[in-house]
Image 1 (cartoon, protein in one colour):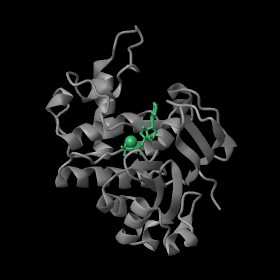
Image 2: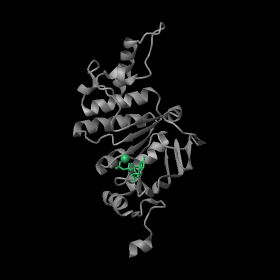
Image 3: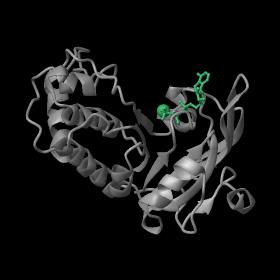
Image 4: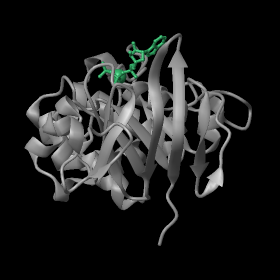
Length: 262
Ligand SMILES: Nc1ncnc2c1ncn2[C@@H]1O[C@H](COP(=O)(O)OP(=O)(O)OP(=O)(O)O)[C@@H](O)[C@H]1O
Ligand SMILES: [Mg+2]
């Protein structure tokens, strides 16, 4: 048995009276993609923001590599090699790929000057691995396509040794070709043993990219399942009705048989 990279155990957080995340437990193994699904407001982003250090849970525990982890800030998260790629990507539009990759963490020469040549060389090296077709090293990232921008954001996380990657809607607003490119990137990261939490509203993407899913509803976990053990309809039933199919493991938010019988 391998130790999970991440175990989030019985996590709760409330905003005012709203239980945004209510006793949720999920885990993530090396080389695995776990999809977080649920309606708008289900609590997906809030759960993930606890892992990325943007929010602090009211109760519950996070283990990294089997050991209790204290994550009170994005800096703490980074010290555990947790990197987050938000949908907005947080790229500086007027700068090129290399400048974005090293933004705030620039490489310098022995004399302390920003070392553009070395940053470009490093960028070419990592992009060569992640997205070999990428050629626009001297263009500002605003001139790149959505998928190319996505690959710059992923390269940045990977360069700084992400082991746990959080992706919030990575393929939203991407075309078919671009989505395929991001899918290939994710495959590559899995081979390198990264664990990925992926938030997505696209069932098709989820089945294609995820090894397991965790479905949330009203802040609670409806259930978890291997994607090979459930159908599209099963997953829609989990998202919409909170109904846990036979192939899934129910969570505290799953409808009970009595309610379903009514
Ligand atoms: N900072 C906050 N202050 C108050 N309420 C919040 C805050 N962040 C989230 N919430 C509430 O917590 C609940 C969960 O929100 P969250 O953003 O986690 O949902 P989500 O599943 O990511 O939805 P979406 O699919 O729309 O992104 C919602 O009811 C939301 O209004
Ligand atoms: Mg969200």
